[in-house]
Length: 271
Ligand SMILES: [Zn+2]
Image 1: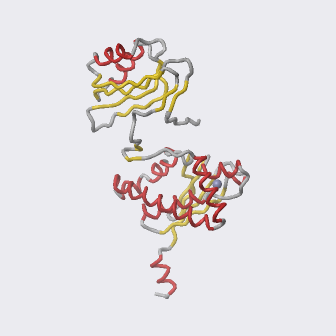
Image 2: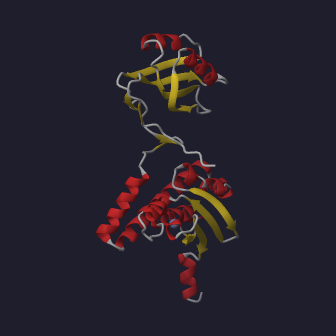
Image 3: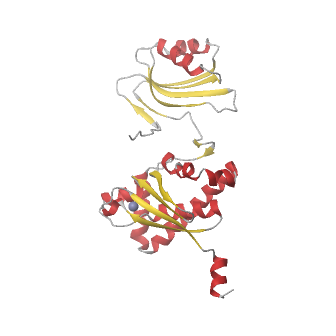
């Protein structure tokens, strides 16, 4: 079952009173349950939002858009929340016309690293522009950009986990493509030097299929190559063997370790 992860950027509900809450809570067991009881008792209807309770912090955050049409005024809501020993701070922004944008939460972080949100349609539009301007030369540009991104990501993973854990947890690490919205990635089969992975709903190929363009996933292949080559400190080749844009159910890739440049030179020189 697919379960979309929605990051709320704005809410629009004409004729309703909306507000955005950021409630700082003591990071203890049951804090969120107590806070949600307080919110419900005030008649606040919670819409989209997020919680954050890092295990190394004494404070957690619950931030959400809410419909407060049937709730008391903001001063009373604020006072009622602050009266609770579980609540350490409250910020509330109100909107009377039923429209509001999240201006309270910045910067955006993915697992403690600064990030930004880019729509897949916008990114695909940028790629399409590159193809229009540079023709087949766009392949090299997109491939190199993607490889650099893959290498960058792999270096962050190595910094966080160390190489042993990163290599051990490779299936889980490939799952970050799912977490970040590129595609729903699963590892198919593998032997020592080659693995097969399946990527459902890959953003590039889904867009190409819609536009009836038979162009395979230049970005994703480059990214995977950069990621794998840095994680394993070896050269890799990534080939798309099945593709959504060619009528297959999902995109599938083989990732193969290739002889390193040094050993290729050695072979050529017969050493
Ligand atoms: Zn594809």
